[in-house]
Image (cartoon, rainbow, N blue to C red; front, side, top):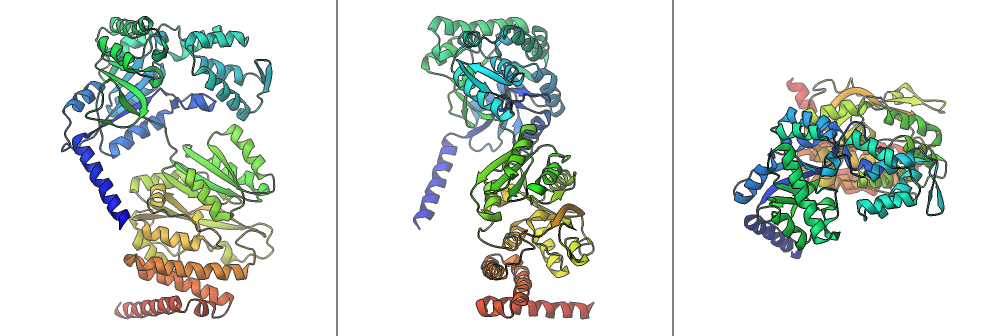
Length: 613
């Protein structure tokens, strides 16, 4: 009762706050849009690809946000009312990179989306010190580096990233002159490299003039030298603010009304100077949406940290001889915007070393190390860190067709589907006898011939699979919207064999829409020692008993698919009783009575339907 009252009180407070101080929308914070990005992680965080930029725009449009210029956003903020439901978004870029013109502008023109570039004028005059990119070049072209009489070996990408992070933590707290002094002390030849990078990466005066005439583009100020304003003397600080404004106004022949604080650092003295220079708005780094009553000179922004389209979760345990084939099939997927989360579940072999080698060549691969928790525990660990719009659970001794994720994602997006199902082809590996029935057991094309490649009600497809005998519980046959799992707190129960038999029926019951693709994307290896081919009868029976009990309890609160779940329980009970006669009848008499009664009723209805037809 207390928790209910607490939730009601929280909701009332939220409503009251939104009435008094309504949300206007988001100011997006970006730096670069480039198809030729950096190599090291810290620098890659400043970049997004053109595809990712389009994805951000489409994501906001899908949520019915209206894109507006920064001037329009500021005017809307002044008049916003709680009863105006429309939310707004405006895009901003910091610093003044050339790819804002070359790669971002065409996309903004394509979707008619306004944007603002906060320009640091030292970028335009080609006098800025791009130490973060200079440092990357130094690290990438050397196998070792001497830092303060200590030599670091930097042969691998991990080692280069580690040293870069160490140096970045030091230099990011210093001004430009101090950074140049540090490079000189270390004996780095940086001047020519920095000048070349300035010419290559920064906007020019001509670029700025062109952007000033572009109707979608607003130019704002970002100081002269990207200085930390809170550390500057008052006169220097004011010059940084006013000289940048004057220079930009002279170039584009328009007033400069908007400002972005370098590093997001701000205090009362700085905001007073910003106001004195005639800026109408200023943005900081702190995360958050913009509300009506927010300080116009301390507006929050939203970092556009891009997320992969698909997260592929791969539990790893004693599969070193099969892992290369599995990973090759994943890194070569035609859908490139994916993350591959490998969970080393306490594997005693060399699987982790194999993954690390792949990580050096492909930044999309991540490795989680944990003590052995079993398949369910490994999948849950991967799901916990997954960021993709959709997730796929892969087995590490199997492999995927190269277009599997691409086809599934396109079908899911265009059909607004929660779960996409497909088939598998089993193949023999070290097993002397493997019947044709087992090899083709995951091929459902003859059983599910109607409504293929079409979005349909999840309950309808679930029923169809049960009725036709096409139900296959393997999680590897499902491409799943991640929000569906997060919203319903649906994970794999640890400590079970055949955990998919519990997970998958719950997944189908909770989904709204599903789609079946009649293709065998998944290649399932049948081998000795795998969970599926090892004989563990007692543990299997205990797990099945628990699964049936849990599913029966779950069915009670899901009336629309209750009888479908009961029928699946009956199938599992029959399988368990075949392993050990009358096991379920003895262990779960109440569940057995319920599911057997449902099965008899289903057969009765089927006979009547057949007779009527």
